[in-house]
Image 1 (spheres, rainbow, N blue to C red):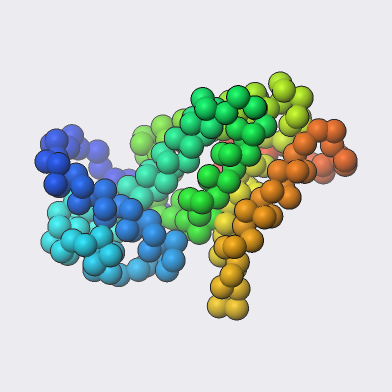
Image 2 (image 1 turned 135 degrees about the horizontal axis):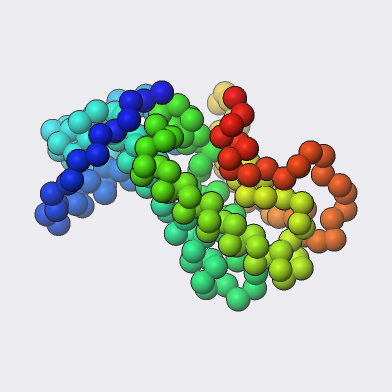
Length: 214
């Protein structure tokens, strides 16, 4: 488990420095998805179009960069949930829009960062997770009230499906896997409709349930 990232007040960045920081985070996210968290940081700097010194000025070590990338991804997913809730008049279509947008963030590929690369009790991560869970539950509750979402699933069930369907398959023989993700997500979403065609085993999974399991 990575050591807790110390919290220090950050001076306000100049516009160019802020752009560089954002480019580094975006490039690191892409490369973590493609190659894993051990990708050389000089390769991250190269993709971001900055020098190594600039990268290390913003992120003194790999742990800090992973910390910021995970916060970036969780924030983007929460933004998608809030936008879907605010902009889609149809409750189930809002849920559908969110699921496909969350899949585009490739959270399955980033799972090793979330499980091994961060301190889950860091205040920033706690706040980000709480926001995400609150936003997804609002989407699901609205869809339940509309009568179109079955009532025997919870936020954890939804996130397990998105995570599993966006996790890269082992080996190099499935290079076209990404092209099927949204197709299979649609099959999953069809299974969430009421009336349910079968009774699910076990109980609905919350995000807390997922965190407690080894």
